[in-house]
Length: 400
Image (cartoon, rainbow, N blue to C red; front, side, top):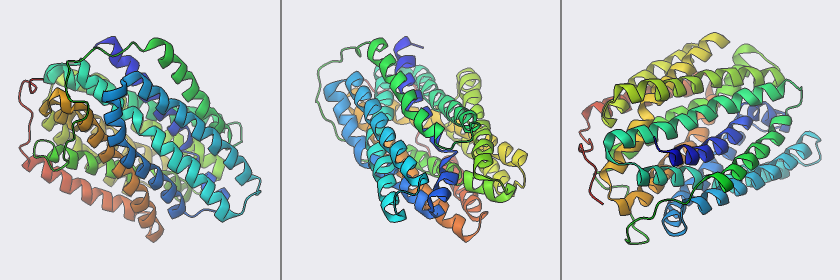
């Protein structure tokens, strides 16, 4: 795989690792703030809404400004928003702000501002990979590296967050997250080369999400991300309630559970996907089946070991599916459409991470098992859809 692919995926890793540093400690932190489960879900959902709104914009800006400037804007913007969130969290734990004011400040910093900045990096990385890879096999491998960067961040972020929580202070991971982003931004500034020159073409090409070429994979990607979001955004509450843990212990155990899922994503995408050389649709079908089993295991898990195993199986399924539904649309698009397609895919995943927190936390307030049973039904429907759709890329990409 070409060296620039790894460099641009470093930005993806840095952004997601910084985000995942916070996720294991946000549920217990929210309860310290006096927020309900649904209130924290609203914060996550607003961040996802920012990504939905901004992803198409960043996809077009990538084609006009170039990949490197957009990545740097994203990383430094996300860093600034997390610094502001750390300050707000400090005030919240000190009880210096009334709960409504604190909620509005968290919504603005961790929700709106972070979501708008976050949106640019995945879109830009996908567009870059599409530009520097040719043919289905190389494109799938490139998207597998992208997915592995996400998986590695899902592993490294919670692991580092759990390690930092050993200090006994929930805010240590909050302050560490922008430091991680700053380091990655500096590395990108000096190490990422300018993207290769492309043939002249229209600066902005719009692509409809209803386009028959892309629609099946946009649906599958959205649905699978939605199922994953339901788990990731509620697992901290589930760990605390089923295992009857304190806030500090919840952060550590949640980190280990999320580490199991992230580790399986990495293992599958690094060790299995490149060797199997399966076409995109087969990857999605296998992934959907495996994820269904994982969701049922989470629903039934009564201790930390079973919860970790269930999230691990979910991660394995996502490890298969992600390179499939991410690479397929790029193989069906022309070169001029790549930025717009990346924007659509980014918006679809962000929409899932907007709806997932609201759906998951809302169902969790009914009963802790309800979100996971609903997720299992969703995954079963997606599995059936994957096996009935025929939208498969041709053996060679559309000519630029």
